[in-house]
Length: 307
Figure 1: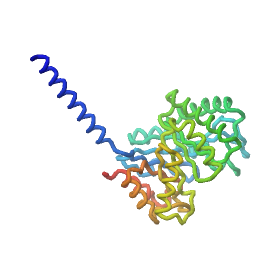
Figure 2: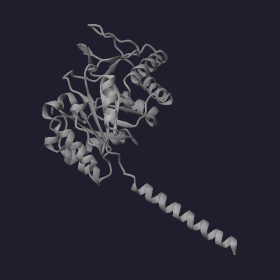
Figure 3: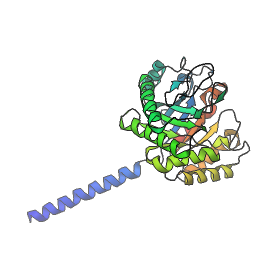
Figure 4: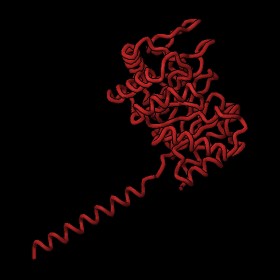
């Protein structure tokens, strides 16, 4: 009699645990409400405090850029020894600490590479995998700790290396920084260009499990992009970066892709209804300052809305 009672109690507890686990799992949002803003590349005196931050989203700033070039008048590659090339006067370590203290939902990372440095392209140009990784881990650990940063974004757009070398260098860098507890997130920022895609897809195939977000530059598509085209582009890149959280994006100056004025938020709503909207990112705060960050506010409102 006692053993049967015990069995029934155990069964009830097991059922209760199963039900509560199921409810907890079901209550978790299907997609994170991540909003990411690149900041500091264009030296327009934009500050973290200029940008509206909705408390109901996960908010990432990405300082743009750290580049492994020297800071001379005619910069040269430094094989993984990174320097700060963002507007550090307005976006200093103290500013980072302050915005994170004021807004608990904010994380700040740095983006590596970018399009240009000085008057030329910023090339990924390692001397060797081992030396580049060693230099990059050392220099970036220092920059990340000094600036109270949380993560890194990979935005190299020009290459003087083959895809496998890029994959090995970047993959080992992210893995080492993560294992050393220096970063808590990592993202990549490819766009639809054959050379760019060959490098980032090689990285994805080998180290995709180390990459949290794919900040795909959908604004690199033509300016006349329509909502159906945008959805098709998104599905294509989600297939390319299979299993990745591909973020949608627009460019503040309206120079490419699907703009907020022409249906970007319609496309976001459609993707959200299909459980495909993983987050939104914007290039960039520097340009958005002129319009009062109107579309940053709208993006965050959409992400924060119940669904």
